[in-house]
Amino acid sequence: MQIAIGLYPEFTALDAIGPYQVFTQIPGVDVVVCAERTGRLSDDNGLLHFDVEHTFAEVASPDVTLVPGGFVTRRLARDRDPIVDWLAATHPTTTFTTSVCTGALLLGAAGLLDGLDATTHWFAYDELARYGARPTEQRVVRQDRIWTAAGVSAGIDLALTLTAELFGPEISQAVQLGIEYDPQPPFDSGAPSKAAPEILDLVRSVSAQKEAEILR
Image (cartoon, rainbow, N blue to C red; front, top):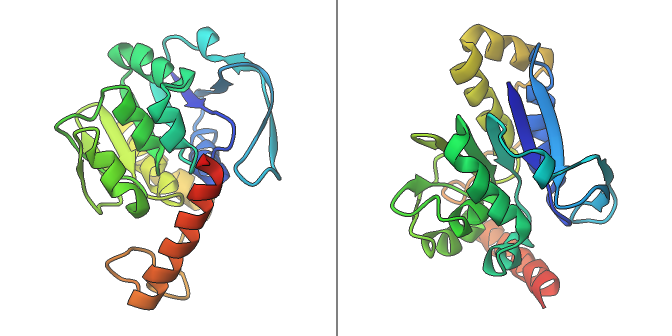
C-alpha cells in the first residue's frame, strides 16, 4: 500500500509530520512524500527544509493521499495550484483522500467536498463553506472515501483513525503506544467552543495578521 503526502511551499510542518510519523510505523506501507518539483521545500516558518525526491507526476496512483494545511492554501486553492490538480487526478483511484487543517481547502478547490460534511482549522470554516462543504467542529470527519481533520495536531488523530480502518484497531493502538501519543494538555482550550473569549479573539487577531502578510 502506498500512502502519498503531497507538499507545497509554506505548508504547516506538523500537519504532515504528525501523520508521517504514524504511517511510517506500519510494516509494509510505502510512504512517499511528493511535490510539484523535486528539491528543497520549506515550511511556513522558513525554518524547516525538506529535500523532496518525488514529483506529483511520479506519484500518479497512490492508495491514500494526504495534504497538509497552511495559511498559503487560500491562495493555492484560488489559483488552482498544481497540488489541486494532483488531488483531483488521483482521487478517482484512491482508497481514501485525506486532508489536515486547511488542506481541506485544496480538496474543496479540487471539487471533492461539495455537499459533504468536512472540517478544517476553525479559522477557515467560512472559506471551506464556499466550496460547498458543511463545516463541522468534529476532530476527524469521514464522508465515504474522503477524510478531513481539524487544525494541525488533529492530523495525528486522523492518521491513527485511518490506520485502524485500513489495518485494524490493534495495529493503530500499537502505533499509538509506540509514539506514546497520550495527550494531556495543561489547558482545555483546544477548540473554539472551549476557549475563553479573550483567547479566541487573540488567536483570531494573530491569525488574521499572519494571513494578510502571506497573501498580500
